[in-house]
Structures are given as structure tokens and as C-alpha cells.
Image (cartoon, rainbow, N blue to C red; front, side, top):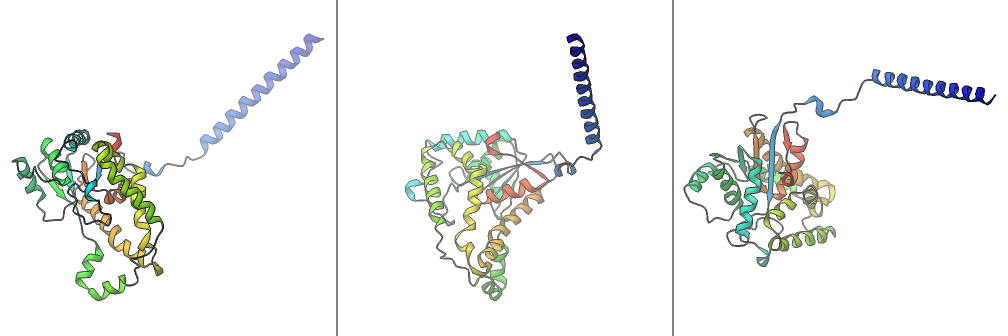
Length: 293
């Protein structure tokens, strides 16, 4: 009797397993019949121009930005230990193997002519990153052209062409808007200034170009005067800072010839934060993380 019960139980178990497997097969077949939802990237070419944005503080401290570095926190890239650290940074960036280099310079600056002079031994005593990073890497990798991709903003041009319209558009911007978040940003930026003397320059620049640093570097423009009444701050930012960076991006598009390009861009890090967003959104480029060379 027991033997019969065991046999019946085994038969039932086999039947259940068979039914389960049949159901699985039917479900799998049904799923295979359903159309897959393709990723948006699948519609665009996989081969794209690669771009490396090297966002930096301005090595020569022109003092044109809202945030000013105190004299005691400034670094000198022509003196040790920063001189050797700069060489380490240059060797690291060269791993990208660029075939084009663009700099934050206005049209007519004479970047390529200055590069030729640099190769002849001139400009070696100039601290600016255009010389100490861009020209140095160009010279050491046999690149003979530097591209000037900086641009002025629409609102700056308008101020020269139509002062009445300019005044109408900018009137009401609260430049003295008291935003408590500015204290947080100031603490961050002041600490970053002090760290420039305390940590290795390569590590410092890589950290400046991290996704988080770019995120908050972008965010600094979204406080203070941005919160002016009647969208005045938002309007001004779009006509000034965002517009300027869109124009810079367009200038880089103009020098892009195809997916074989490896374009290195040396910019103030405030620009790099927005350029990251633009390059990551464009199906024309692969944005290369500086930390992953």
C-alpha cells in the first residue's frame, strides 16, 4: 500500500514539474513575442568623437571671476613643488592622445601662432593654462594647431548694439540678493583655494572635474541674483552664462570633423560644468572622464 502511495506522489510531482516547465516555456514564448523597447542610444552611431574637458582654475589668476583667490592661497606652477606636479599632470592628460586641442581664447588671439612661438622656446615663463597645459601638450605630441573656442554672450553683444533694450532686459536684476546658500558655496570655494597648495596638482585638477564638483559648480549660478523677482535673474543667466557656453559648444562642433577626432579642451572649470552636460547630451560625442584616463 505504501509503495502505491509513493508511486502516486512521484507521478503527481513529475506532473507538477512538467506543468511548471510548460508554463515557463509558454511565458517565455509570449515574452519573446512582445516587442522590446530599444534604448535611445541605439538610434545613433556608436562611433563618436571623443572629447576630454580639462577644467582648471586660471593659473595666472586674472581676477575676472566673481570668486577671488587670496594672495596667500595662490599657487605658482613655475616653482616647485607645483612645477613638478604640473609635469605629472601633463603626462597624465597626454594619455588621452588628443589630435585636436581647443583653448579658452577669443578669435584673433593667435593661438596657433603662439604655439609656433612656444615650440621655438618663447612663452615658457607664462603661467596661464593655455601655455602650461595646452601648448605644452600640443608641442610634446606634435600637434601644430590650437583652436580658439571662447565666445562672448548674446547679452554682451546686445549691450553694445542696443543699450535701451539691454537696460530694459536687465533692469530689475537684484545683484545684491541675500542668499544664505552663498555662505555654503563660499566655504567650499575658499577651502578649495587652500587645498591647491596642500595636495598634488594632478589630484586637485582631477577632483575639480568630478561629476559632483561640476554639479555644484553649475549650481552656484542658480542662487543669489538668479532668484530675482519676475524671472529677471533667470532671464539674465540664460542670455549671459548659459548662452556663452552654448556658443562655445557650437564652436567646438565647428572644429569636429568626425568620429576619429579626440578633442581636448582646456577651460576654466565654470565652463567645464556646463560643457559636461552638453557633451553628455549630444549623440555626436563621447565625454571622457578625466579621472578615468
